[in-house]
Length: 65
Image (cartoon, rainbow, N blue to C red; front, side, top):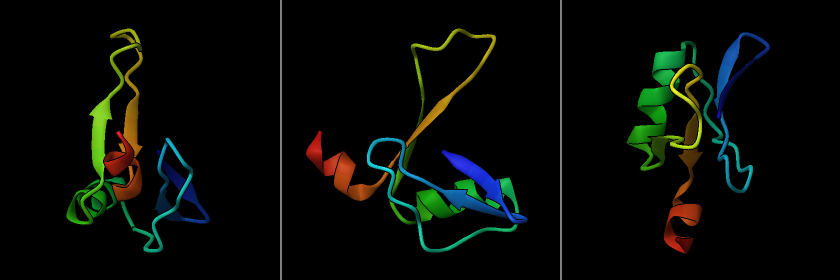
């Protein structure tokens, strides 16, 4: 998940809860940052089209699959 805390965006793995150390100034910077670090971000197919949800996974959780 990407959440805003104290004016900065934080990337958190939706599987294990690990947080990226780097924080970001904008939501798009956070998306670009997680991709740069090799994390994945995939749309949750179980959520209906009216409410989109994304699942972010860190490198460790990707390897565990």
